[in-house]
Length: 105
Image (cartoon, rainbow, N blue to C red; front, side):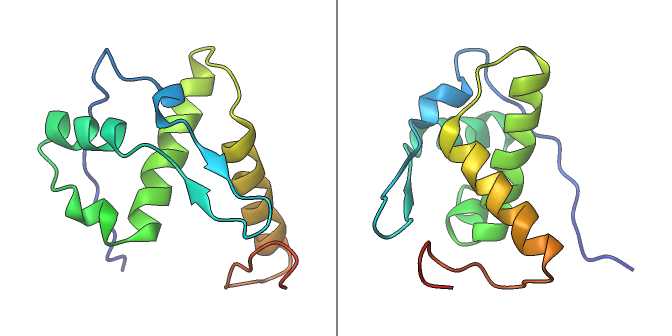
């Protein structure tokens, strides 16, 4: 039995994946982005933004699903998101359950 909760997310027409302006610090691996698009999505979806601010897993699930839809509709690739997905795939293939910052594994 799963504890996962399914919610319908609405991406406002004036919000694009690129609006996140994702960047990654090459030294620490920390990801930065603009929260405004996430806040707009939460408002349009009647979702408390705290569910995403307080849970990296929830945030990652939203961003990953949004990115998949973005690409499916012809959107441009995002190098930071592509890198994060690749890292998750590699970690999963090796049975890793904890992410390490680049150069710190």
